[in-house]
Image 1 (cartoon, rainbow, N blue to C red):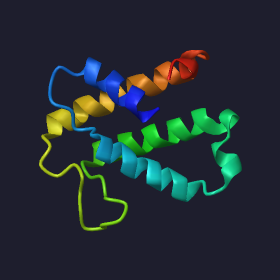
Image 2 (image 1 turned 90 degrees about the vertical axis):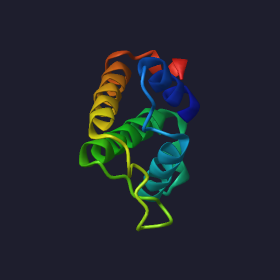
Image 3 (image 1 turned 180 degrees about the vertical axis):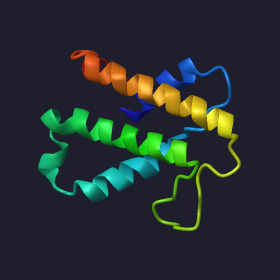
Image 4 (image 1 turned 135 degrees about the vertical axis):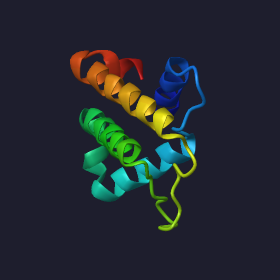
Length: 109
């Protein structure tokens, strides 16, 4: 699932990508912590979980900081240019809009 999201962003950006698989993995772990029950991860809830991860991603990009799940002092976005983070935030918003407005979009993931 996250591979598809990362591929979408890779196709969208013509620059280097600040959203690595490590960033997405950490955001997934934070989302798992927020929603610890198996029922939170059943098929009807998956779009909500994806939206939650993308909203966390946007927050990290706008704050220019993404904490590591296990290493609190590690910022996964350290050293990435602010303009690239802004671009990634805009593209992430576009992805959320696409997921919200297109009912069949989640099936493509």
